[in-house]
Length: 65
Image 1 (spheres, rainbow, N blue to C red):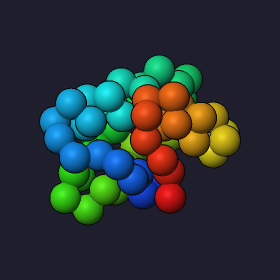
Image 2: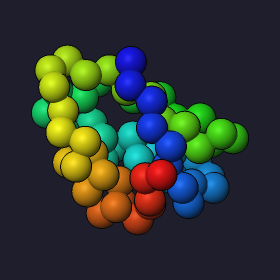
Image 3: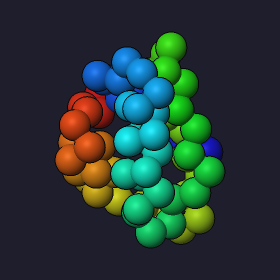
């Protein structure tokens, strides 16, 4: 399980947007978003490029950090 910090999430819509964005990446599964802490955890079924994750988060309107 890999955990990242995502800034800018404030509601259930944000949770769904981030979850959907990450699930679109090949190799990502079981995405869990904790709105209170801003932490997003996901399983890597195969190696996933960190830059690709950052780009997906950014395109969804949020910031990885």
